[in-house]
Length: 329
Image 1 (cartoon, rainbow, N blue to C red):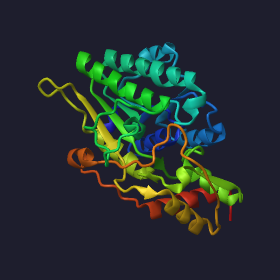
Image 2: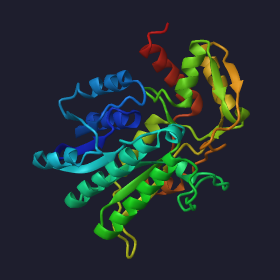
Image 3: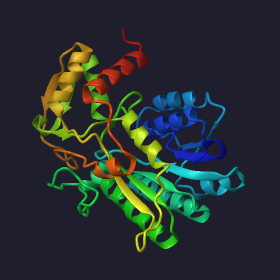
């Protein structure tokens, strides 16, 4: 893409991944149209702070609204041409989906249909957020894009798998180029407060107990935000095309390919914070899986993807940001 002549729509631009992607695009000279409803799933103050930094660029414009309403996208028809959509707006959270199911139908399914229809009419390539949660209780490790993923164990995971199937249908029927991004536990500065690293850091600093599920026998393929953004940037220039009977459709795992034991992660945080955690060990929660592990062969082959930030370095950077953001000396 020649960024000087294009507008990229980034939905969920005030969210963790959406913010970092929009920031990278603006740095590279793109014009960015951001859309976000700024809901209160977690503290909107953090979202507003991200948004303020994006608004410092003259190339950034913003619409505060929910994509569950078709009119939001219909009203864009008179604006300048948008040539790609990066869709990160969604209701996140495996555990939240157990107690608040209805919001997932609206935010993750209805809104996604609206995005697909918008892209179909204009034949705009779509990159969208999926999740490693789609692998459910799969026992085979590492998780590969070729694995069967028909047994999700949370509603959140089911909606993300539904997104992939919906995208495939539009790619097949309308030759719409789509790329699904199966993110593996993304972390880093400006991260989500409901994620383990942020929650643990907050609790340790406040000398409050941290809840450790499955009695600590958990592993996650933690992926630093800069590696995620680099992969997305490269995939924007690797839009799929039809190949014989295969539609212009791709799925990619984006992970570090290095699962980290939860207790080791806590040890890293303790070292960086110079404070011991008060640990409460609990059984595994409904919807959780003991381990995630990304096979990243597809990304390696297609865009020469190689994660650059180790968990040790990533935790150091996150803690430094956390202390700066909360003015902790």
